[in-house]
Amino acid sequence: MEEIKIVKIGGGIIDNENELNKFIEQFSKIKTPKILVHGGGKLATKFANQLHIEVQMIEGRRITNKENLELITMVYAGKINKNIVALLQKNNSNAIGFTGADGNTIISVKRPITSIDYGFVGDIEYVDIATLELLLEQEITPVFCAITHDNNGQLLNTNADTIAAELAAAFAKKYETSLYYCFDKKGVLEDVNDEESVIEQITTEQYQQLIQEKIIANGMLPKLNNSFYAVNQNVNKVCIGKPAMLFNTTEKYTTIQK
Image (tube, rainbow, N blue to C red):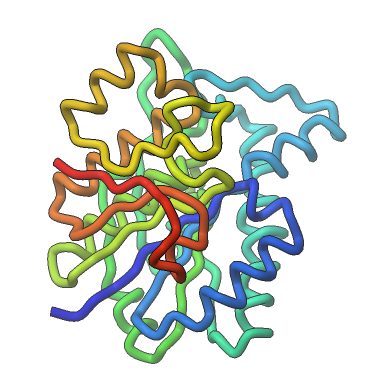
């Protein structure tokens, strides 16, 4: 079975020009078929503040009204996505930028209003990997931003960690799939103030305990929920940590297991 790597990078890497350049240089050297997924919430929040657009977050997730959707579409699918594609081309790694609308790859539905109205936020319903397989066969790397669509003309803000997990789950049906969540910490930390307190392995049972003890909260919750979703969809390997874990076997990081 052919191997594929799905790699998601967060705002801490995207916002640091040196770190992003270093990451892209290393990522370009990965020989196996690969897909890159990026967030960009920090940069979107920065632009929103400059434009006096209110930003609301609930449990690590962005409330997306029409004004915010227009902004994040420009930032995610425009500025960040095209910058990453250009850097990959600079490093001789052919790439194409994607939203879920491109190639009709990821179809979502607008999240229903319950006690919270998330606005134009999409929950993924379907992933079609056919177009992506054609590109990967030609050694072209798809680069996904955190935008999907509802197949009825509406773009939707969709958590980038979720996009990475759903892509990994879709590929896991045919490929040996590894999912890497890369951000600016060495992994899931037992003590947020101690960079070395990496929890190197988390099972479902341990995860529930860590939530109860409030060791895991806020922005880390969606990442871990998506990680456990992925392993339960037969994704071969799910890792959380600094980008170095992709290239350096001595690097500490967190692995997720059933």
